[in-house]
Length: 228
Image 1 (tube, rainbow, N blue to C red):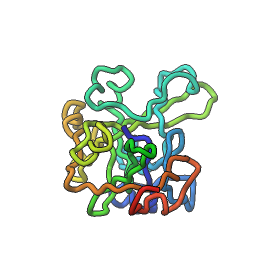
Image 2: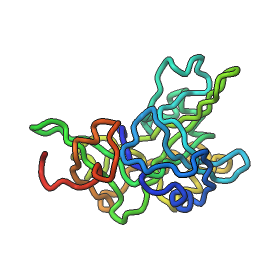
Image 3: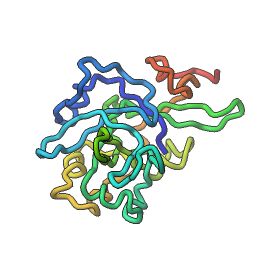
């Protein structure tokens, strides 16, 4: 699964990496080292005009058909293998695919002293493009809610030591195919959802301070030499 990630890179750099327009109401958004569910995160998608854009969306999917956005499931993850079988996701994989550019994500491993958080990033330092689906909810005079969920797949050999699932990561070379729902159908898109190569993944333990969503700062992704 994926329950926390970090987006400390400046948004305009993410936008440049995916060749997107940066669209935000914040002039100087702060770096995020501990992005948690039910908060906003940077998401890349194809806009109505066909251009690629980077926008802040809510993490925790609110489907367009929900009667009340405060009731019912708001999934932060969706299994890539079962997208076609679940009505909530079947339409979105065909029409509303997105990526979440992150510097890395967190996963926890059981230990004698309790669950130990680990930070997982690309070895080359480039952003990871987590595969996602997004939707837009709107009812009457209520404010619209645009939200997303992160797609998961089997863990690679490195992440499997911590958890049996990991985010599906879109290779930069496959970005256009993933986002182009007009010309690439759901079947071809699902074929891109696979574990990121273990050899290109760096993993190390970090402070338990990341367990509290209120905590922020670069110290959260600093490697620990030993258990706290």
